[in-house]
Image (tube, rainbow, N blue to C red; front, side):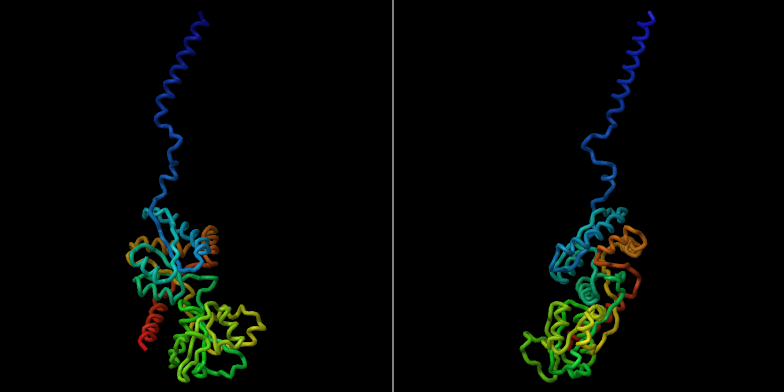
Length: 314
């Protein structure tokens, strides 16, 4: 009798347990359903851009930065970081003007041109390679017999490339403000009128320095900070003829139609990056950036714009 009662109770307990499982099954997570975490990541994009002839290297350095910024903009529906690399700054300016690119980092001269062409807004200074500012210099051979920039009349100077701030535009502006007429030579063997300074492009700072030492050109324009890293023996073969004013090392631009609250958030993200270990790691990958800070970058760009306009008008 007792055994029969015990068996009946066990059967009832199993039936109750089975019914309970069936009632809970509809709320169980299906195997192929996305995890709750993946559902919270917005699909909107933040796009940063740069100019380079070697895109693969730029993607390696820029993608972590894009991802980092995107990860902190979820409140704006943004969760994806994208990098675009252009062949020239005119293309970047067009992307910014159309709203396809949100953030652009560059040295003052190309930043000024992009701002001019797109209406982009400067917001911060970037300490690139540990430098908050830099300047350009004009170098000559130590035994050249050149003592002032006026002595460059009828001679040739090598600039780095047409988009360089410290290897081209700063020195071009310096010569212009010194009252010199500067003209481009189509080749090194072309002669220069006695009342003008001829220039060519070396395409690299190291080439510029070597051309000066070898006598291929009479003078060269290069980065003043970089020049200090040249081996002492080579530096002794040259001397600095002129030095330009300092200017912000790198500038952050954002697209002109960005919402003010989103622009403020991006500004805050960048300024606070150097205060966390994760942020410092991303900054180092991002071309050895030390930090971002507040700086009157617009004033620097305005000065360059005024000089650019005067040079173009001559």
